[in-house]
Amino acid sequence: MSSILAALGAIAALAAPLAGHDTAGRCRPAEYAYVTNYGDATLSAYRVDGSTGALTEIDGSPYATEPNPNEIPGVRKVPYARPKATPNATHVAARELDTGMRRADAVWRTASNLKALGFTPDIIIGHHGWGEMLNLPDVWPDVPMLGYMEFYYHPHQADVGFDPEFPADPLDFPRIRAKNAINHIALNLGGAGHTPTNWQLSTYPDWARARIELLWEGVDLDTCKPDPAARRAPLKIGDMTIRPTDKLVTYVSRDLEPYRGFPLMMRTLPHLLRERKDVKVIMVGGDGISYGTPPRQGTHSLLDKSQISSLIVPTLSSVSRSVPRDRDHVARRRAASRTHSKI
Image 1 (spheres, rainbow, N blue to C red):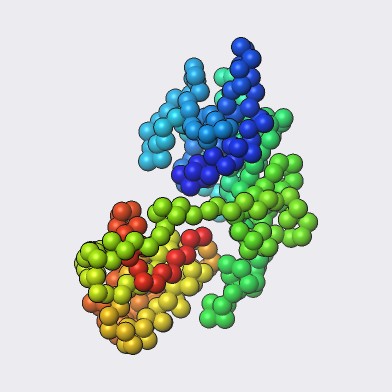
Image 2: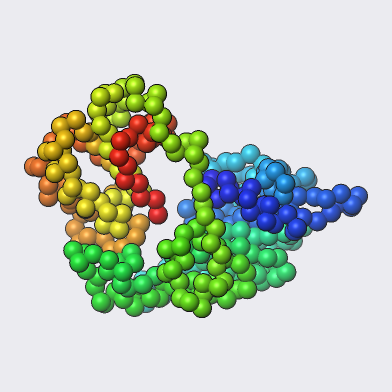
């Protein structure tokens, strides 16, 4: 959520013409309705100044803020009820659409209450992947909507079927194709779409690309840059200490899985550590599956570590689920080589 809000300054400049005027004729900031995915389960209403991108509270807002880990100054959040799990009787290929429409219903009810209390945004922004935004044009039919179009699913050469070592099951192809149902509904709502990379845009059919704008996410160069001072001081992460003379290789990913190149990384490590005695390796990531198909037993990270455990020198490599944010920043600035997968 924070990364999307950080980009709102640029979006606010594009949306500045949406700003209206108050009763005194003064120009007022545009009001945004931001819809998160199911991970946060809140619909947020706030103002963004079109010239500065600053977030401000809505004066006299009747919407209560409930505390949660994503608390942001100036943002008042209204939670919506999470939908019940999709019944097992639903065809496996249709379950994602069923769940998405349940989320859409829940957000529709919350948005309708907001409208009844007097709130009408100038623009609606959110992620189309999970269905929350699908019914919002029924609440605010005249409000423009900007939706994040992240990915169009394919049974080959995408998040499945890209590596002969991990072949896709043809019986799963119908489910993979059906995952695009929400994509198709979203693309036909009449709003605007955006995606951050040419590759993601290329996954969409030709007819859909004309409806999606390429908006680069950008990189915070004040954080993501080499730091000579960090190389001169010892760095401790977990039980490993990296000395100034050590060469540090880092691998960072949300989950350690084939789609993020984790098996290739693990099979590269024995050769790297045999050839370079001054190299230390830190890998950070969870054991879940964000994309692709899970292994039949266990997790990909445990599977790959067990397969080559005898080849890796334990004192020279470390795998962690997560590291504190400040340690993560220092490690990236200190690293001689980085493999960073952020999808």
